Length: 172
Ligand SMILES: [Zn+2]
Image (tube, rainbow, N blue to C red; front, side):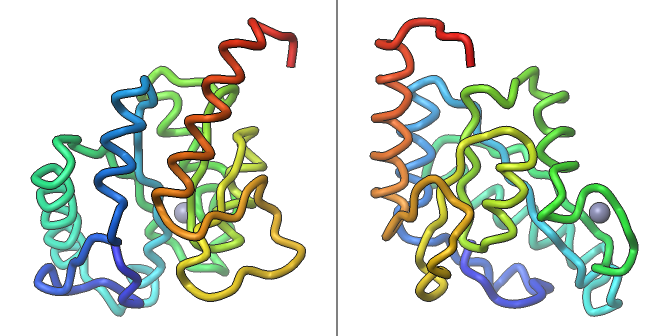
């Protein structure tokens, strides 16, 4: 969804253009999508749990209506000083999602619009795509690919998925 700072109002939930189509295409290609999100507004007292739940429900419903995909979502409610293992750039949320969904880091791709997203993906062991929609990414971006939009991200991921199959099982 579009970045609105600390999301506390379901009426302000907007999908990023191209996101639903890209995830639908990736799901059709065999990827299992999941959302991992820092929500430190909860720890900061800027969002109450009922607001977070309402925003979550609105987001999942909008996304399902546009993509046909009902996204499992994982949230870190902690603040930067809490020392938790789930706040990106730490990989805890990705590990939880992978355990729940029966997925492995190998073959996984983390797509995000912040360097901390790419860092979390890398810490998890996934390949990483940084969406350059929130401004120009840093030159020393930790991502494997910097995508101009969701369509670009989808293309890059699908090309790698094909080459991975063609390349055989490998030993990485
Ligand atoms: Zn956390």
